[in-house]
Image (cartoon, rainbow, N blue to C red):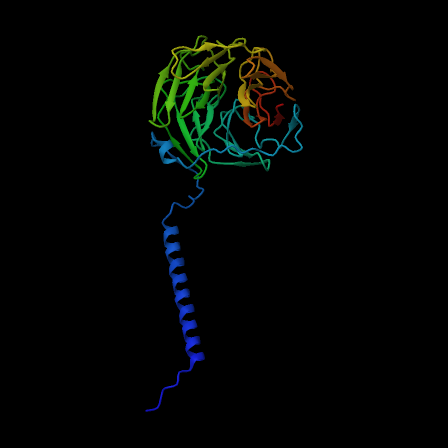
Length: 371
């Protein structure tokens, strides 16, 4: 019987082709599975301007992935102790409020150049110095308070009157989601107020002072818990006042300056530590001021702008949280009140505001490197 000869080179080629085919088939299956899984993920929502008016008490849980990460803007070439002019805002406004989320500053509401209450929201990219507009607020507001929390923008209170009448104070509380360019309603605050101080400490928002249609200077403190979605009231201020500034620093809420009955300005500084039964008096401001803003920069509280009852204040002061005393920084190039102020590390940004006391507006944007 003849022995069958095997063509070994041909068999080897066949085995190689079979191995390549199996590999390609496995790769194709893996790609198909990956595409299916990707299509079922969250994806990026379309950038449509929309408003949802259903209260969202557990926003922090649903948006836990949206967190404001410290940006650490480049400091090369920025001279310390000197204000520099940046790209002007697209719209002249006064009595605005501003908050930073990552590299971006959001400037909300206020009065426009015609003296009308505005719902406009504009944002400034701090790295590129470019401005853009986003979805307007659901209602036009002035003298409201804007803060950020876990990558979301929140606006509370303000006057809803169409002009400069200091009326129609609201209890409204709104959240803006930058990813979806969408506003939604939050639970109303327990007290209607405008020209108040607001700051976030931990997972709570603290709103103090201000005024409304029945009380010319409020002393109440309202606290919103982002985890539970509920408001509570805290201890009252020792000094009722409005047009104040608030900041969170060293585990406490600080309420600074302000005025009462629309007259003069104060140097008061009070501090509230969560769990305490009363506010604590702190070293007074070097200069009486109201209608200003405060931020934390390089271990200190920096107060910028405002008015003293007769004119705008250009003096900029810093309170050292370590030394416990005030010192003077470089004056604003243009003194103004009703402005927005944010900080990123040692950089302080002053945006818009009125150059003269009363109903005035500007497009000025300035930056100071502290120390």
